[in-house]
Length: 74
Image (cartoon, rainbow, N blue to C red):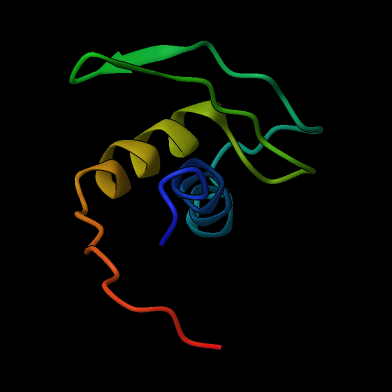
């Protein structure tokens, strides 16, 4: 996976898997946070997502390692 697409995939996964407990009424821009020297900016889309749940999933998913692709497929 292209490293430039990792933040987008991470954000999508966070939004899709986030808990709906105490959900917000609309999308929100969350407070930025730093993890392992990298800054992350999260944003929720639509209703049913919280910044807390988005951050917890971002932390979990950022620990996953992405393998290196050695050949291209068409």
